[in-house]
Image (cartoon, rainbow, N blue to C red; front, side, top):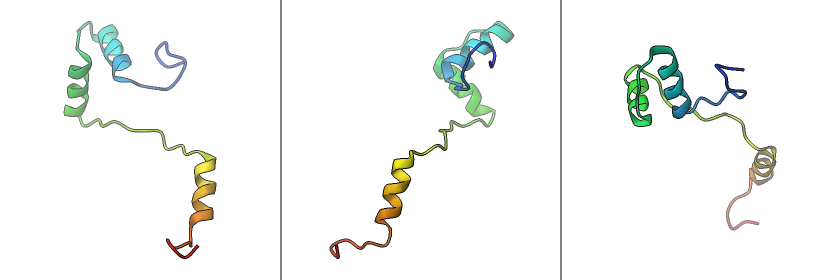
Length: 68
């Protein structure tokens, strides 16, 4: 459990709440994003891909459009 949340998703709303708890200051979600950006943070997406997508990709490799 990370700071009271059962999953590892760090949304802007959660970061905003945590900043409020730790430092007793209030930011908007947009203000939280600006603060993080100013300190060099960037948003990230999980690197997971669906297995089906990988299977489709490997079947399609090597084919050229129009050559069946």
